[in-house]
Image 1 (cartoon, rainbow, N blue to C red):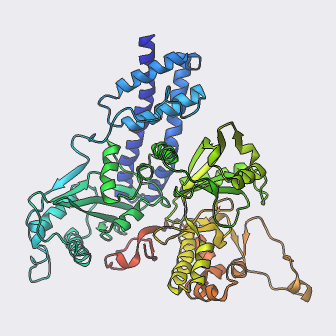
Image 2 (cartoon, rainbow, N blue to C red):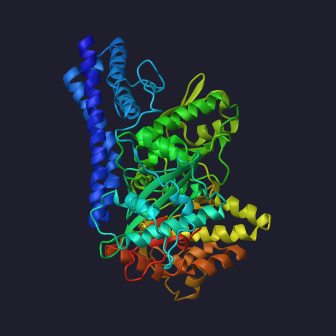
Length: 609
């Protein structure tokens, strides 16, 4: 039996290795697509890769059932299989991912609770803190004294000279992109000048670099949509100075640096939960996550793994964080603040920055649960352009009964009884979504208005309109655009999070309101004209969005075009003609100057981070 358990463990690990091989191959294909300007294929790869994990788990299940009749094995055998599996992970480069893959396979076979540590890895068995690839995950460059001289070492043309220029150029060229640079020397000068300016403004300029001063650049580019991002850090006497350099491609197929980001908050926006996952080649993903944590320390590992395309590992880490938080907190789960939704019951733990969303049995809309799940899956696979919140989907999640408030328990029993499994000590929710908690936009506007915070009102209305326009650029019509369906993030960005009515923009029929022909038609409380299922009348938006005069004047000064049917029809025409518009996670003002004839076709994010 010892040999049989080892064979089964090896078969499971073979399934994972196949999965991760295909995962890395997607990054290689993304690099080729970027070089050839095939950006639609990059988006397709992003969508396809999300399904990789489930397909490989199913393949492993089929093999185990066919070759080993795995469903008939005893508990003792499964415990041996787990021990043998741990032995196989000695020297493995992705042990934490392989453990999660093991969990997925075993839980599908045994149908046991996820948190039974006798059969699965509730806690990691292999440490990854000091695991790295050979060569390491990042390249190292030594600027030495050249960094201190960067502010003064300028020739008569105003250009930075010296070995620092060559060092930065090497860091860019070392990625080996098979397409020409538009003007690499110009880009190097801009990056150095932007770094010098930022460090002076923040009073963190390392004028006196230590002998160990180093620049670390992660070996693979981060691909997403039309962008390829260089991610790195400067380390000087223990201080860390992060940076990110977005590389774009112009209409002639030449590449250029679009901007230089040096602030942790700016870099954190690249990895926002409201954006599509990166495609990046990582032999040792734990080393990459450790590196990124030094740049954006407030970002949980669970979210970093997810944004690197390893969403199943992100779910595993999130669940561990959730259990840890439960053990170290005492507050109760309560109804989430804001107006109750028609299709979802939403609750939260005040001390934990997430919300839990359950599909109601008794919904205020004629919408099936299957349709709602399909909408959430659409958002998962679509480009979220920084304006739609990502979610983790879970089954059979236990909540301590004594931590569920009576009001919440009564609500869940009333609106979602089929989702509940009430046991003596725990309330198990059979299916739910978890996402980052945000302040509902309607509450944010009420609070800003009550306090007379005119600047906050201006910002919120501007962000609200920009959020809708960014979604439109990604071929998404949000459907229900009431303020209650949007949230405000910690960085002040407005993000959409109610998905049951979203449609592809190209599936909508944008119409003008017909002119009434009779007094009865003009005074009718209900539409007197025929309305199709996907008909949209932009002129009506103002009736239910802009009742407040103050908000209306702000909205009309910034986003009056959203009430014009020609705006929406024009966006549809561009998408149907094949124009791939994009929204990049930094403001227009941060971009380096561009010659109009050489600029690539993008839509820049014109809101502040």
